[in-house]
Every structure is written in structure tokens, then in C-alpha cells.
Image (cartoon, rainbow, N blue to C red; front, side, top):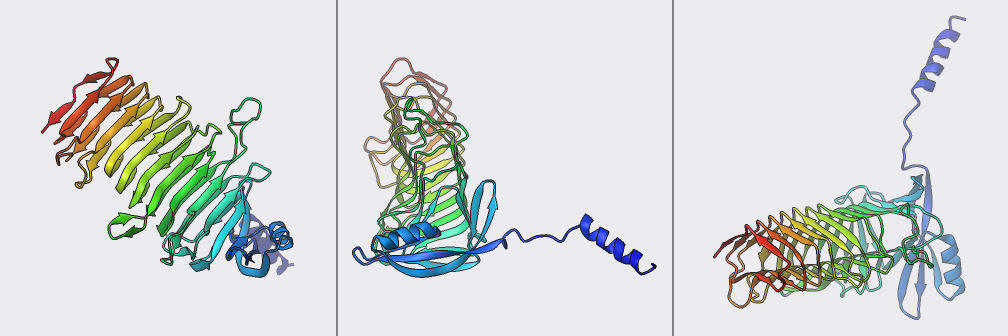
Length: 382
């Protein structure tokens, strides 16, 4: 009996303090590779059904490319790419509800070769959340890529009867702690986004002989009135446009951005006249413009630093057209000299407030083509 008591106490201790479980060790799953000889294109998928169907359609099934760890959390299947460099010669596709997790931006590198590559996440049945975290996505210098590094498509998230987003509890997309480098056409493209967060993402475009080869850092587009989109603490370098917004996207909050060596900072041409843009605490160094909006109402631009690239003489810091109810307050416009028609703020067919901005060395400080604007307490120093 005296030997049973220590054993019993040991068992009870194990039950009270179970051994920690490795959340990355649930199971290993295959990533399949296919090849289409007609278009000379590789394709990777973790979906066995897709692998089978494409094989029936004439794609060459090349078997398992590699094994990745898989776990389940928050109604999402997570694929864990281990530390190291992983090479792909085509696109890697997943269904929505799939998340990709690396070991860290300096530790896990997904390296793509050739055209038609990148990560693509498309609609699927269900409401699983999607995230891409803690890795670098790189395209090697072997010819300009014709696709974005990341494409996430939320298409058909709208009610066909009303045209509105079906539910505010729609799947979320989070892209966080990610570096995008190399010869991509665009950095990130989100189609019909809703409840989306991009945070601590670094996008470095491709530069050849001083000319930007990457079109856009981030693109939001689609007709599902996407809203509750946040871009925070992120960097875009050497792209033609830092952030491009199109179609019927409604609400975007930008905070703590650095957009440098771009032709244009944020360009938003809406077709709905009801979007909202909030831009705060950011730095934009651009050649042509910092912020350009058409039909974007309810805009707040506060506490930002806008610099002009020294090579252009037709720069406009903030340009609003047909975009009412704007507030432009407490921004700094610096070093707009260089001749020409460089302008800090240009307002046309808009009504709102332009208050307490610090405008330095600007040939044209503020152009106001509507009497309904309130323009007060702006410090203009040439």
C-alpha cells in the first residue's frame, strides 16, 4: 500500500497539469502539384478533390510537392509552413476558410518563379475566417510576374435581392506580419472584401533603372459594398500606386502607413458616392499625388505628413472631386517647391472643412472651387 500512494499522487498530478500539446503537430497534409502542358503552368493545391478534377481535365498530376502541418482553430484550417525557403513554380490556391502560418517573416519564405504564380484564396461553402501571417512572399528575378502576390476573392458575399452584404458576420481576412518582395504585378488584391485587416505588412515593389515595375501595393475592389476594412502600421515602397480602391467598396480606415517612392499614395474613384475614408498618422512621399478621390464622401484626413518627390512640377497633395463632407485637419505639406503648379489641397465640387494645416514651400496652397468649404487657421509658409 505504501507504494501505491506515491503512484496515485503522481497520476493525480498529471491530470491536474497535463503535458503541453504542440498546436502545430495535429497532422501532416499534402500539397499537390499539377502541370498543364498547354499553357506551361504549374498549379499547387491542398484540395484532393481539385487535384482529381483538374487531372480529369487534362492537367498532369505530379503528386505531392511537400507536406505541411495542419491544425484547426476558430472555424479555420491552418497550414503551417515551417522555417526555411519553399519554392513554387506556379500558383498556390486555397479555399476561403484556410489560413497560412509561417514561422516568422525572416524564417519562412515562400519563393515563386515564373508567371501566373502567387497565393490565391477563393470562395467556398462555409464561413471560415482566412489569414496569412508570419512569412515572406518573394518572386525571383526571372521575368515580370503577371499576378499579385496575394489574391483573396470574397465574390458573391452579397444578397442577390437587396444587393447588400448578407451579414456582418461574414468571413474575415487578416494579413499580418507579412513581407512581399520581388517582381510582382501587385502586392495584395482583395475582391469584395469585408471585415478585412492588413497589419504590419511590408510591400517592396520591383525597380528597374529607377522606374517602378509593380503597379499597386494594395488593391480593394468589387461590388459587394465592402466595409470595415483596416490597413494599419504597413509600408509600401516603389509601386506606381500605394493603395488603389475601386468600384463599390465603402469603408476603409488607414492608420500609421508609410507610402514612399510611389507615383500616387491613395487613389479612390468610387461609383457609389457613399464611401468613407479615414487616413491618420501616416507619411506619404509621392511623385504625382498623396490622396486622390472621386465621389468619396465622409473623408477624414488628419495628422499626416505629405512630401513631394522632387522630380515633378505638377504634384497635388490632396485632390477631392465630387466628394462631400470631408475634414482635412492638422496635416503637414512639405517641400512642394520646384515650379509648375504644385498644389497642397485641391477641392472641386466638394463641401467640407480644411482646418489648421501646415503648408510649407507650396506654389499653390489651397484651391477651393466651392463656397461651402470652411477654410480656417491654415499656416502657409513659402
